[in-house]
Length: 254
Image (cartoon, rainbow, N blue to C red):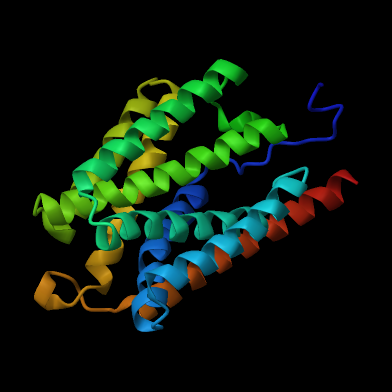
């Protein structure tokens, strides 16, 4: 069925500077928010994972029911995916004693498989054409894989390989900059987008650890509570602006 006839519009926002700012901050909130709920709030990894998984299921159901991009629903889903993705890796590492090398490799394979199946069925990986329920399911499965992979890769780099939070954030930030340059020089739009999207997760995780961890462990000592609150405030403001912009466009076209 033609997506336009079905009444669907693209369910993903335009890739702008605001998109990347919210994305990076949501990845950091995923790291700091999961730590706050599990440690500071005393819920533990198990209850935090269950609670966030339930909230994610509800948010994703709302997202799938919409027929066009709705900023507050979309970004709420992203933040919850970020937290759940972090918890998946943390449970594997801390509770099941799975090596970060193994979890990084497994999530990498799962992500590649998801891309291959998505492309084989839809013949398109562009986020500018998320206009059917099936494509959107592929999209969110990919997003969850990138968050879990990014958390594992970020922890692998900063902890297992001993790079530290500052150097880890610098390295992943530099890789994002290289990807941006490649795109500017004519690199494949879809490929460079997904590379940058994947890299923002370990960058956000490293940044979150840098801000929250105590100075004894190489962090700035801001704590998970203040960091999460600060970043969530910025996210809410940017999403509110996006929501008002979408509302204004609807009024103009109606």
